[in-house]
Image 1 (tube, rainbow, N blue to C red):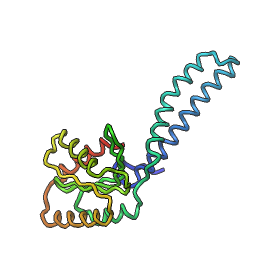
Image 2: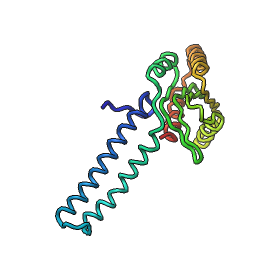
Image 3: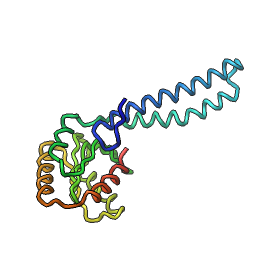
Image 4: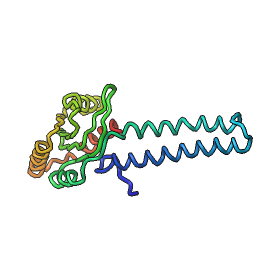
Length: 192
């Protein structure tokens, strides 16, 4: 299985598979330890049973990771390729599940050009204004106070904005790649 780095297309599907495999392995190890102790002593009351019970903690933590990611899927590769084609001059981040204390917000793609950030989500349940305000406040807390964030749920509108931002970047040729990478890193840090 090819490794997909966080922020690249297909990351959510890759992470889901890895979490499922990890969870199965952890529970198999717990079961093996328990049955090893049982076969040696012919009773559940042994030290290996305690080890197996304690081993359930990381196994259950991995299971929580599977359950929390399960409802969300990666953006279609066709759409990701289309965005990459139209955003050659911009910093692009894909497949995020942005979390706050109150909400979980799947965002398929975020495009960054200097202090302008546009995001796209295909999930109609996401509160677009709340998501934009949350990202903006996190960036503000990290020293990026003059950033404009807008999240859209209409793909054609998002693609038109991306084309416009890319055209402006071609003409102006601002040297803001370092700033954009820092902003992208912060956004990825608040994402699962």
